[in-house]
Image (cartoon, rainbow, N blue to C red; front, side, top):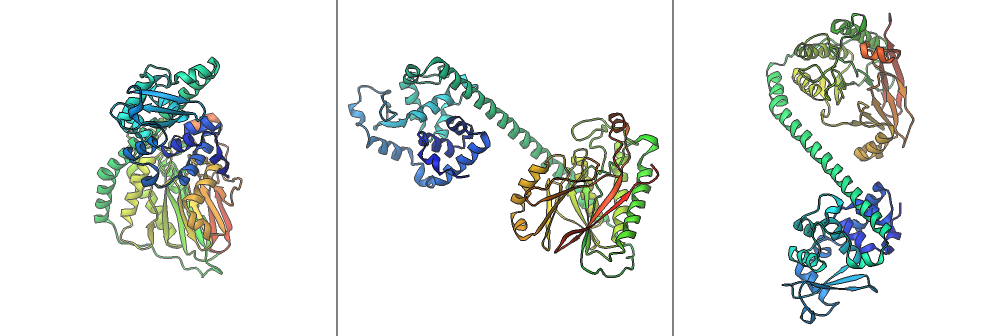
Length: 488
């Protein structure tokens, strides 16, 4: 979108000041733009500003430039005083202790008062105002004293109060209050992100790393024999949708871990039989994590604390999952080398990270099993010839979001590819989702059994299956496989 027209905006100076301090909400109020467009406008204005060393002059230089436009302070009638020029829409401040006069636009003064007044919520301190508006602290104090303003004052100058109607002032105060609410929401989000980052850092340092070292010291060196099959007519990679397995779920009809182990090994064996007709894949990609575990805490709940029906203690479920996953990987390595792609799930965000590192360490002595990427990344992607392959669990980023995030996050790979795919899970149902921005999103089904909640809510009617896709480096997805669960 072209933003050049805003360079002629009547309040361009205030817009540039707001852009320099990243006050997108302020830009939205001044221009009437939606928040996201105001942010883009702000970034455009920032790109047009001179480098910080030139655009934001030191306080002494700023005062010197202001003095060239107004009378020297020696002619001022008294300290901490000001004059208002209606023709140029500027204020001239005479501040005690400052040798030169200070000239500010009306919009900039309004912005200072809005930040300092508690009408908008929690007011900014003198230091915060000084940093935001690139002014020395003594200058800010002098301006506020000249205008006779405290935290309890209205965020309007006497000139504004004399020219604006009561309704206009009420609307402006309401908008400023809304901006403060938005600011607080953003601050709360930032604090939440910071807490999550600290939790993850502690989890990695005190749990993941010691576990990796423990497994690496005891990693076995065996390797299952390879199946003898012909070379393929053309090379391909097999992407297998082992997602949303919910290991440890206590389902209806006696469904549990033993039932699930037998079921999934049977589906993998049948899938291998079908893929053999194409020949040996170059490699096999399977997700690891992505609600592989049904629970995430010692209390038997998901990451967000939702209680679940389980078929054993949390410790039994977690420890048996490693053996269960190793059996699946061993079965697939008979066909081709396996590459594990970590995927964050909403049931097992932390436990799956732990289990991923356990599996990584288990296969650390083998060359035919590798882990690609980390569980920290919400989207994993890789360029395969002219085909971009990505995976995402499917709970956080929907179709529109994925079509915007993936081209940015994998910009180089996107530019080099002709075919782009993202495989997701989460909903336990197979579906080709609407294509946006040349990204095809394929949702995998799940073969796991239904628990009591899914039956009561009517979500147990979806076809259970294990899906896989053969991907050509030059032609994209060339064949889809679907191994349904038989026998109910």
